[in-house]
Length: 262
Length: 292
View (cartoon, chains in turn yellow, orange):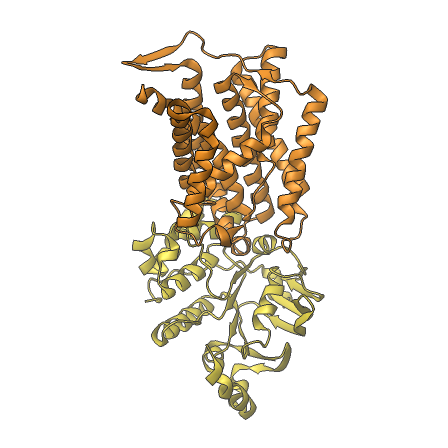
């Protein structure tokens, strides 16, 4: 359902960044929270161009808080965020979108009273007027074929799986340099979960840089190049996806904790 | 006779519709009421009336000036009473915008005095008669300008990127921000448009009564509140329909019962609506209680 017409992405990676090895996203010692409650306590993380990095951990480990602090939804208390070498710490979300970061938050958050097409077009708000928006709209709809017939339907009337397509498609409309995905499989049927991960693999193979937040360690690491394991606001383990999957501690503590998942 | 009263009621309703649209836009953008909009309408109307009588400019220019003044006043209200007030304090913008309203009224009475101002007739010779029905030039202007502005607003909200952004921010401001929409600028734009509509409503109401007073600001706010509660808070189309209804009801009450019952009947109607359908007559949303 999610997989369909191929539409190749053209991520804009400046040659300089690739050559010098400047990471697409570099986060150093980020601390953030709500009120006085610490959500993340000093997280450092790097995503290089073209990589798919998974950020894993149980409920409440601070995964979403981390993404929110990176993408400007909440102000970090300390630490820094660099996007392609530019310091963007604490910048407003809409500026970050212009700088190349697209964040699909948890729960998809389609704009319910806007039509599917309006949702998609709003995803390209920062580059409105640039003539390629129509072409990209066609491209996204070709990729997510079921959205075609729902084009003029209010987004709030879509099913969970369709809303997830719309949320990801809408983020692609911004032509991001890096895509932050927060639990894209949450609340979907097992079949749709498989399709979402297939889609993520597709996007990654087309060269898009992705930071994927997941509770489902196996699925998350299954498609990632590298992974970070989070527990109570800190990184407790990091390594290549293969290493992490082979580590008995990971399997023990995290796959064991799967029972509590939503 | 009844038909004439119905038409008069609809005409009154169109001015209510503009001020209701004005309130509902802000409710949509921020989930807050701007209680200074009545005074914004008043100051626009007073200035428009003064420009026409003192500077002797045409109605069209005075009207455009009223729109501009409404836009500026609403923009300033946003900066003074909303922009820097923490979202934690839900009631604070109510008080701060009420305060701005009081300041506007005092400024107007201090600068131009507390006299009522006359709004001269426009298109004096024009009059349309269809059977027993009579529509004079002023009414024609009110009807066509109000209709035009409503249509323009709908077109703007539904057909332009900034209009879509306004509706997106109204749905979910954080998400709109994540899509690259500059949320605070969109909210400022919403206030400015809302002020333009308030300014239009003010001068058109003045034109229908041929007089404007610096003390009608809060009364306008009250009427607008009745309309938007009846139509469903934040519901743009519901507000327009409710405005026309209340215009007709008020006019019929004055014509067939007594002018003293005018407000009573409207308040009763709104009271009954709140008890029976707290989300308003035309809305699917969760309702008034959840949104203010």
